[in-house]
Length: 117
Image 1: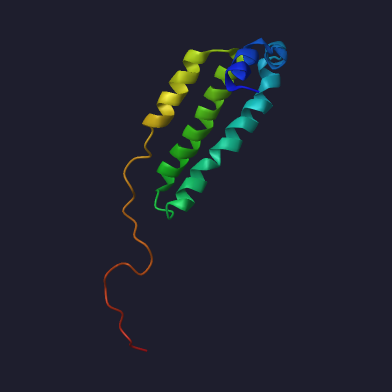
Image 2 (image 1 turned 180 degrees about the vertical axis):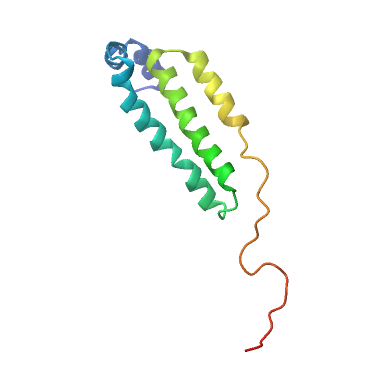
């Protein structure tokens, strides 16, 4: 199937949109929590891959940002709000977790070890 045809067929499929539109806010809350927590895990994963150098505040901010961007993408794609999709994409590419914390790796203090017993 050609990519252009996929994009032309996608807006006509309204089953998911109809389902989400029929649910109340309380019924959508578990779905929103699931989406948020699924993508909030990217915060600790990126910190682990970078050598665990983020402070706790930066780590929590990254988790909150990842989950919120995922919710924006979900909202934009289900409701067909492509301007919100563009906003989420712009926010994602402009995000930076901030300066690195001043913690050092174990053993990198530069001091010499004494061999005293």
